[in-house]
Length: 608
Image 1: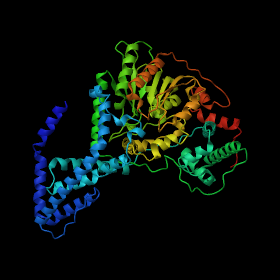
Image 2 (image 1 turned 135 degrees about the horizontal axis):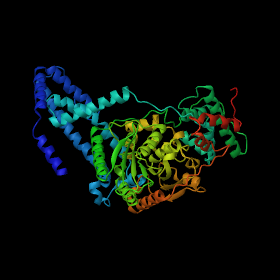
Image 3 (image 1 turned 45 degrees about the horizontal axis):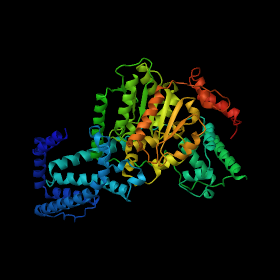
Image 4 (image 1 turned 90 degrees about the vertical axis):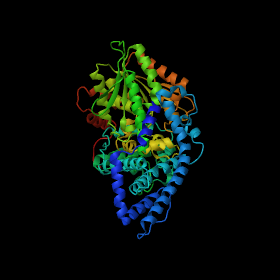
């Protein structure tokens, strides 16, 4: 197949398309009769080349056509030399990317055991400083180089294939600016849940409060923080902005008082934050500027081609693609279906969709097929590197999509399997569509202990020399989704949210995103099964055949177990269970539960 495509490309390159040839010839004739215009075009190329680090003298406005032609030749030679230099550096970096694609490509599955640095832990993969810097510089140079090539193509000094690709690159960036930057996207407002219950749980599951607060302030000294700093940090991460109305101000004051009480208890002496304005910087995804960067068209073209190849592989395995309006999913029916068999739903993490999970999905399909059970794949395009990414569904929309996809196919509650951000999708299902979850397997879950600064710092705010991580978190769709359509209050998972469901959690001890040690401590006295994936980095477990086989076997065994949902209703304390028990009677029970919780906990409405 690859040879056939290469042959087509070579044949196409031998002959210039007639329309493009006519356009080029017309442009050349026009420029030949207008030396000043031609000089301006080359000057534009010079300015664009400055962004690539290519420096050439600017033309004199009165230069003759012969002089301009000589300048064009000099510019072309400089570009060629600079391209050779940049390409030599870029090829070294792209070796790991090629290894990644090779390991995830179905047709090259037999090469899994070959060298593959990109699949090691970050501390092992990054053997020299500056990898991400080189990748950033190379991709930042693409746009000015494209403008230069486009200008040189108009001047007749660049081959038409290069000029055509440069035109496509410039058009892609222009479209991105108009649609994404000017048009804007819809954000998700902050949730209006029980803030007091949330904050109580955060403080209860925090061993060292001082380190916890300092972590959110980039390690600033705790003694230097004022009440204004604390209020700005809490209001930004809970409300998305400064407290605006009386209710938010009361909630904010209550949260600060509970924090001071906890610090007083830990220190065995009264503690109050000193008064003062907010002067320290803190982590807040909703308030921080999103490092959005439109990557080169070639990157998106390669990724989209690989994902389309994966889609073809899914169709070959019997999957069919469906849409619920806000979400897309794949479903495969067993060849010999068993009536009432518990389905399995897999949710992928941030990256390039289902492609890295090809082997995992294949093994899960084999297990479901042997049991006569259907299998679903929940697709999240907003978190998969693509040029035309869709918006991330809100938690309520995703819950509705989960209910709809099972109802449309008359399937019972499913066993959910999620990796990384896929575990957040499971959390949404547990909170907004609990009837769809019979059990769940959470692999490297980012949903636990989201109140700690580890996950936000590890993926959003920490400087990294990992080029792959840098590409993912600066992608416009991914960056916008995690900063403007994601609220940690809705994504955090507490043990109480499982409500007695069977759950297995898989953690990597060297995970640089998930706070594995604190999660293990949190789950040690619960019924949740905790399993160690070994000393490896985030997302690398699936490329160890033995570890992946163990995860798959446990996930399939969990699916085979009968569902034992137990609804424990307690009052006061277990507000979430109360919400679920009242949901069938009240259309919107959250406000009722919130008011009763405040009254029972001694926090009634009153004067500010």
